[in-house]
Image (cartoon, rainbow, N blue to C red; front, top):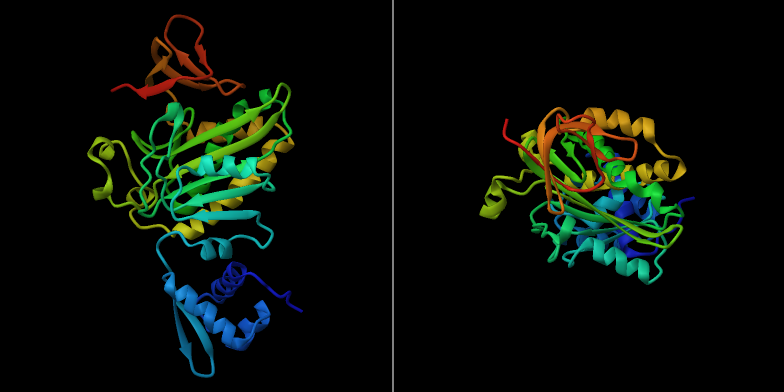
Length: 333
């Protein structure tokens, strides 16, 4: 017998999960009421609420309801409907200063991990070195995973690369034409940036206490929406694959893949798999780059990464240089 669903958000996600499974077919009001454990009148009320969020339903005599339209923007109920039933908590905001900052506040308040924070827009989205991440409410994804790994800090040096490579792999499968990873934390199509990652941690002497992994991904933003100063350097998944993407299904797939990648990272160092993914998604390999580290600038040919995730740079002066951190730019061929 189906378990009664009590919270409105859970009821609506469950109803949408049934409509997704029906794949355009009709579902009777009685069947929907039985699944969520409420009356048929209450089901109608929840469908009406969903219509106010951009969903469309048609009622067909003696057959039931059919899902006919979905919102293009981020929908908490639809993301949850695409997720497995045992998925961890997903928190949604129409706007927030930064999903990383909100995740950090939730961790400090003692929220159970793992959880994921989403926002339709950020007012203070940021990347490495405190740089601003342009975060309009125009069909992009801004999210942060929160964890409490019981790992020594030295185990974490490959984490951002590992998560980024998993994202490249997922986006390739989802869209048919995925981005590459520009060391250490940017997702690129050629020289145009489609996404950025930011990992932040609270570290004690011998273990990593809290870990937040943030992602900003340009999905469906129109070209005309970019500020002039970044228009020539930014791109979107929609532009690269030639069609808009299903934002909510993609969001759920990122959550599922991100949690799976974290679990595999936690279980053992995924060195062989990481090396294989790096060979496939490294956009710097064999290209002339400049690495800025503090006041020092180095130029040469990128030769991949070492076992610690450091960038290898062949300057032509003997053994390659190893960079654990730095700012990399592609040089004109």
